[in-house]
Image 1: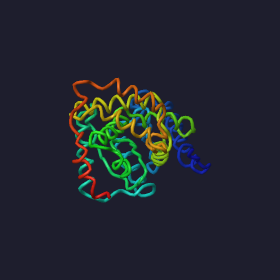
Image 2 (image 1 turned 30 degrees about the horizontal axis):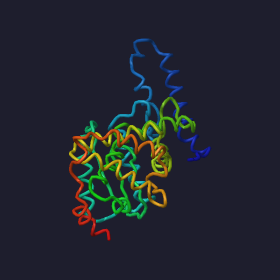
Image 3 (image 1 turned 60 degrees about the vertical axis):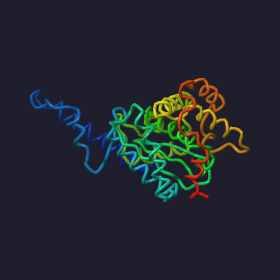
Length: 281
């Protein structure tokens, strides 16, 4: 759990709150004609050195900007990216193929490989998705890899991390008038993305969104329950599933969600997939 110091509160919300209070006092003390301006005008009196985010009305542009900062923090402090250009391009092509069918195409998507032996995948916000080299090696084919990428993209489509941030910021008392310090939201968002599981309903929603993307993109939907079942049979629970609740229920739902006409689409050629991954050996 991210702990915030007393000095942080002095810097990030007390002064903005006082500024707003002063501005409101001035506003109400002026004639009606002078007071003909919006709340946005009032908020702009907050000192420019303090950046605040309105979580309740977070725009796509703001989400992408925060996602970029979270990405920078993640790849410099948490993980090392795999630098092979060919495989990164391959994963990005899969991701973009799915994102085009996501229903949320107004934001850019970035798909990256983390150089890590663990079986894991995660998404932050603003279109950033990550899969590990360990997960890529564990997948039997491209469709199975695509099923994971689709699931993580589904979290972004449904803005699950954004919703978690709203809840957590309120619980930690760092949200004032629905506004949060920009640096705080980046740190908190990264912590949530890497260590806090999504809710049961959020996982089901991401599974369904991923399945829809798989089918629309032409991939075999049967790959999703097949890969998750394979992971469940491993001796050690993969990181990808250990922080995700209700895995057995999810497998059952995924099997039920498979459209018979989309069960055996593209991406099931195991030999072709393994040939792609030779550089990871």
